[in-house]
Length: 92
Image (cartoon, rainbow, N blue to C red; front, side):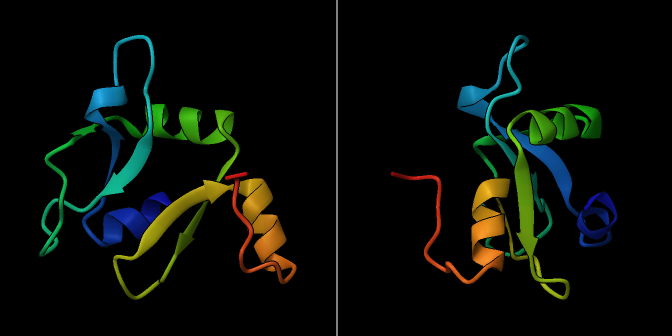
């Protein structure tokens, strides 16, 4: 994941309004040099912070290898989608 992100100019980030010293908040992969990238509400964090939150929230990364498309989803959702439930999500 890190290699893919970095090869596309991506860096770990958190949504600024959810980020504090005590809580990393909502995480994203930010592509600062990408055209049309909206990252003014994101703050760069370390990969260690990113992966700690990634594991704590049991997330998975959905991405397209040859593009900048990526999305963090729950592992439970990823598993359901892998088994054919294309409408699966954590939302109730």
